[in-house]
Amino acid sequence: TEAATRQTLARDTLAGHHAYAAHPGGHHAWLPLPDRWPAARFAAHLHGRGLAVVTGEAFATDGPPPNAIRLALGAARSRAELAKALDILADALAQRAPDEVVV
Image (tube, rainbow, N blue to C red; front, side, top):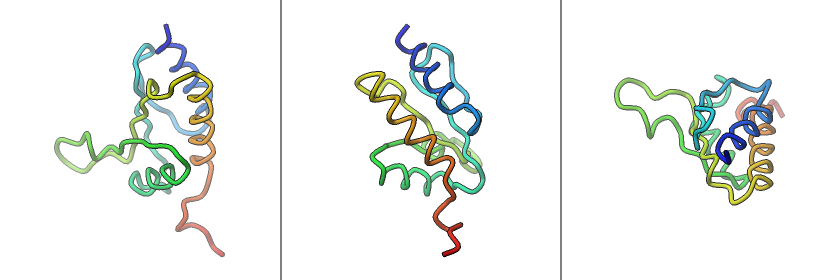
């Protein structure tokens, strides 16, 4: 029940950003990233904001790694903590990548 609730929270918070794949009762979500955010750069950006994610590179077995991150929805100690983390993630997804900044 807790995992399903966290999945709903993630799906609702990230709606409209980029589709992600997850089992409705799972503890993780797979989030493909927009092309403007290479996974390593996005993970570093999130780290600077206090979030830790794992890039698709860690899960690639052959061929190029997917431009995606894996979210551990069970890592947050509470739903409130998860909601805060998801808000930070959603905000980061909406931002321009640092190399896109003109000035």
